[in-house]
Image (cartoon, rainbow, N blue to C red; front, side, top):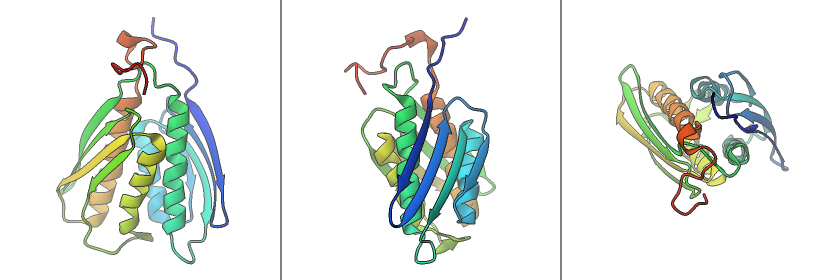
Length: 201
Protein backbone atom coordinates (compact mmCIF):
# COMPACT_ATOMS: atom_id res chain seq x y z
CA UNK A 1 0.00 0.00 0.00
CA UNK A 2 1.49 3.34 -1.04
CA UNK A 3 2.18 6.29 1.18
CA UNK A 4 -0.73 8.72 1.43
CA UNK A 5 0.30 11.98 -0.17
CA UNK A 6 -0.46 15.36 1.37
CA UNK A 7 -2.50 17.77 -0.74
CA UNK A 8 0.34 19.24 -2.79
CA UNK A 9 -1.50 22.09 -4.44
CA UNK A 10 -1.15 25.86 -4.40
CA UNK A 11 -3.01 28.90 -5.66
CA UNK A 12 -1.01 32.11 -5.99
CA UNK A 13 -2.16 35.53 -7.12
CA UNK A 14 -0.01 38.58 -7.80
CA UNK A 15 -1.35 41.97 -8.78
CA UNK A 16 0.83 45.03 -9.38
CA UNK A 17 0.54 48.15 -11.50
CA UNK A 18 2.34 46.17 -14.22
CA UNK A 19 0.90 42.65 -14.02
CA UNK A 20 -2.11 40.65 -12.86
CA UNK A 21 -1.51 36.92 -12.45
CA UNK A 22 -3.57 34.04 -11.08
CA UNK A 23 -1.98 30.57 -10.99
CA UNK A 24 -3.11 27.14 -9.77
CA UNK A 25 -0.59 24.30 -9.43
CA UNK A 26 -1.04 20.63 -8.58
CA UNK A 27 2.25 18.75 -8.24
CA UNK A 28 0.49 15.38 -8.41
CA UNK A 29 -1.45 15.99 -11.56
CA UNK A 30 -1.48 14.39 -15.00
CA UNK A 31 -0.09 17.19 -17.16
CA UNK A 32 -3.30 19.14 -17.72
CA UNK A 33 -2.96 22.84 -18.51
CA UNK A 34 -4.88 25.99 -19.30
CA UNK A 35 -2.41 28.79 -19.91
CA UNK A 36 -3.03 32.32 -21.15
CA UNK A 37 -0.32 34.98 -20.84
CA UNK A 38 -0.69 37.01 -24.01
CA UNK A 39 2.77 35.82 -25.14
CA UNK A 40 2.34 32.90 -27.51
CA UNK A 41 5.78 31.35 -27.13
CA UNK A 42 5.64 31.60 -23.34
CA UNK A 43 2.24 29.87 -23.34
CA UNK A 44 3.76 27.10 -25.44
CA UNK A 45 6.70 26.65 -23.06
CA UNK A 46 4.55 26.65 -19.90
CA UNK A 47 2.34 24.03 -21.54
CA UNK A 48 5.47 21.91 -22.10
CA UNK A 49 6.36 22.33 -18.43
CA UNK A 50 2.94 21.08 -17.36
CA UNK A 51 2.69 18.22 -19.83
CA UNK A 52 6.16 16.76 -19.37
CA UNK A 53 6.35 17.39 -15.63
CA UNK A 54 2.87 15.87 -15.11
CA UNK A 55 1.87 19.03 -13.25
CA UNK A 56 -1.63 20.45 -13.58
CA UNK A 57 -1.22 24.18 -14.19
CA UNK A 58 -3.78 26.89 -14.78
CA UNK A 59 -2.50 30.40 -15.49
CA UNK A 60 -4.39 33.58 -16.30
CA UNK A 61 -1.90 36.41 -16.72
CA UNK A 62 -2.00 39.91 -18.10
CA UNK A 63 0.65 42.60 -18.13
CA UNK A 64 2.02 45.68 -19.83
CA UNK A 65 3.45 43.69 -22.73
CA UNK A 66 2.72 46.56 -25.11
CA UNK A 67 5.73 48.22 -23.42
CA UNK A 68 7.92 45.17 -22.85
CA UNK A 69 7.34 41.54 -21.89
CA UNK A 70 9.96 41.75 -19.13
CA UNK A 71 7.60 42.52 -16.23
CA UNK A 72 5.16 39.74 -17.08
CA UNK A 73 7.85 37.10 -17.67
CA UNK A 74 9.61 37.98 -14.43
CA UNK A 75 6.41 37.97 -12.38
CA UNK A 76 5.30 34.67 -13.90
CA UNK A 77 8.59 33.13 -12.79
CA UNK A 78 8.09 34.53 -9.29
CA UNK A 79 4.47 33.34 -9.05
CA UNK A 80 5.22 29.85 -10.40
CA UNK A 81 8.18 29.55 -8.03
CA UNK A 82 6.06 30.61 -5.06
CA UNK A 83 3.43 28.04 -6.03
CA UNK A 84 6.06 25.27 -6.10
CA UNK A 85 7.36 26.36 -2.71
CA UNK A 86 3.89 26.43 -1.16
CA UNK A 87 2.84 23.11 -2.71
CA UNK A 88 6.01 21.40 -1.44
CA UNK A 89 5.41 22.53 2.15
CA UNK A 90 8.16 21.20 4.42
CA UNK A 91 9.41 19.03 1.52
CA UNK A 92 9.13 15.87 3.57
CA UNK A 93 9.60 12.60 1.72
CA UNK A 94 10.62 14.13 -1.61
CA UNK A 95 13.42 12.78 -3.77
CA UNK A 96 14.81 16.34 -3.71
CA UNK A 97 17.28 16.00 -6.63
CA UNK A 98 16.39 15.55 -10.26
CA UNK A 99 18.07 15.76 -13.63
CA UNK A 100 17.19 15.24 -17.27
CA UNK A 101 18.87 15.33 -20.67
CA UNK A 102 16.35 16.11 -23.40
CA UNK A 103 16.93 16.18 -27.17
CA UNK A 104 14.94 18.05 -29.76
CA UNK A 105 16.41 17.37 -33.17
CA UNK A 106 19.92 18.87 -33.13
CA UNK A 107 19.46 20.51 -29.71
CA UNK A 108 20.42 18.68 -26.52
CA UNK A 109 19.90 20.28 -23.10
CA UNK A 110 20.91 19.09 -19.64
CA UNK A 111 19.06 20.27 -16.53
CA UNK A 112 19.74 19.48 -12.87
CA UNK A 113 17.70 20.66 -9.86
CA UNK A 114 18.02 20.50 -6.09
CA UNK A 115 14.99 21.37 -3.97
CA UNK A 116 17.32 21.99 -1.03
CA UNK A 117 15.94 25.38 -0.04
CA UNK A 118 18.74 27.54 -1.43
CA UNK A 119 17.88 29.61 -4.52
CA UNK A 120 20.40 29.62 -7.35
CA UNK A 121 20.11 29.58 -11.14
CA UNK A 122 23.04 28.86 -13.44
CA UNK A 123 21.77 29.12 -17.00
CA UNK A 124 23.99 28.47 -20.02
CA UNK A 125 21.58 28.50 -22.93
CA UNK A 126 22.86 30.69 -25.77
CA UNK A 127 20.42 32.00 -28.35
CA UNK A 128 21.21 33.40 -31.79
CA UNK A 129 18.03 35.42 -32.25
CA UNK A 130 16.86 38.34 -30.11
CA UNK A 131 13.26 37.14 -30.31
CA UNK A 132 11.79 33.63 -30.20
CA UNK A 133 8.31 34.23 -31.45
CA UNK A 134 6.98 37.04 -29.22
CA UNK A 135 9.40 36.20 -26.39
CA UNK A 136 12.71 38.09 -26.07
CA UNK A 137 15.47 35.50 -25.70
CA UNK A 138 17.07 37.41 -22.82
CA UNK A 139 13.92 36.92 -20.74
CA UNK A 140 14.28 33.14 -20.70
CA UNK A 141 17.20 33.26 -18.27
CA UNK A 142 15.40 35.84 -16.15
CA UNK A 143 12.29 33.64 -15.95
CA UNK A 144 14.33 30.75 -14.57
CA UNK A 145 16.20 33.01 -12.13
CA UNK A 146 12.86 34.25 -10.78
CA UNK A 147 11.50 30.71 -10.58
CA UNK A 148 14.54 29.48 -8.65
CA UNK A 149 14.39 32.44 -6.28
CA UNK A 150 10.80 31.89 -5.14
CA UNK A 151 10.81 28.09 -5.37
CA UNK A 152 13.97 28.01 -3.22
CA UNK A 153 15.74 25.62 -5.54
CA UNK A 154 19.04 25.17 -7.33
CA UNK A 155 18.60 25.08 -11.11
CA UNK A 156 21.34 24.40 -13.63
CA UNK A 157 20.68 24.48 -17.37
CA UNK A 158 23.35 23.60 -19.93
CA UNK A 159 23.11 23.37 -23.69
CA UNK A 160 25.16 20.42 -24.88
CA UNK A 161 24.44 20.92 -28.60
CA UNK A 162 22.10 23.15 -30.56
CA UNK A 163 21.60 25.24 -33.66
CA UNK A 164 17.93 26.23 -33.74
CA UNK A 165 16.58 28.60 -31.09
CA UNK A 166 13.09 27.09 -31.02
CA UNK A 167 14.59 23.66 -30.46
CA UNK A 168 16.91 25.01 -27.75
CA UNK A 169 14.15 26.65 -25.70
CA UNK A 170 11.73 23.75 -26.07
CA UNK A 171 14.34 21.16 -25.07
CA UNK A 172 15.14 23.38 -22.08
CA UNK A 173 11.57 23.61 -20.78
CA UNK A 174 10.98 19.90 -21.33
CA UNK A 175 14.18 19.07 -19.45
CA UNK A 176 13.24 21.40 -16.57
CA UNK A 177 9.85 19.68 -16.46
CA UNK A 178 11.33 16.19 -16.30
CA UNK A 179 13.96 17.14 -13.70
CA UNK A 180 11.36 18.82 -11.47
CA UNK A 181 9.00 15.86 -11.86
CA UNK A 182 11.67 13.56 -10.43
CA UNK A 183 12.72 15.96 -7.68
CA UNK A 184 9.19 16.56 -6.31
CA UNK A 185 8.24 12.89 -6.39
CA UNK A 186 7.76 11.04 -3.11
CA UNK A 187 10.26 8.36 -2.02
CA UNK A 188 8.29 5.94 0.16
CA UNK A 189 11.51 4.69 1.79
CA UNK A 190 11.89 7.94 3.71
CA UNK A 191 8.17 8.38 4.44
CA UNK A 192 7.66 11.82 6.03
CA UNK A 193 11.33 12.55 6.66
CA UNK A 194 13.10 15.66 5.40
CA UNK A 195 15.77 14.62 2.85
CA UNK A 196 18.63 16.41 4.59
CA UNK A 197 21.06 15.68 7.41
CA UNK A 198 20.02 19.09 8.80
CA UNK A 199 16.39 17.86 9.17
CA UNK A 200 15.14 21.03 7.52
CA UNK A 201 15.05 22.41 3.97
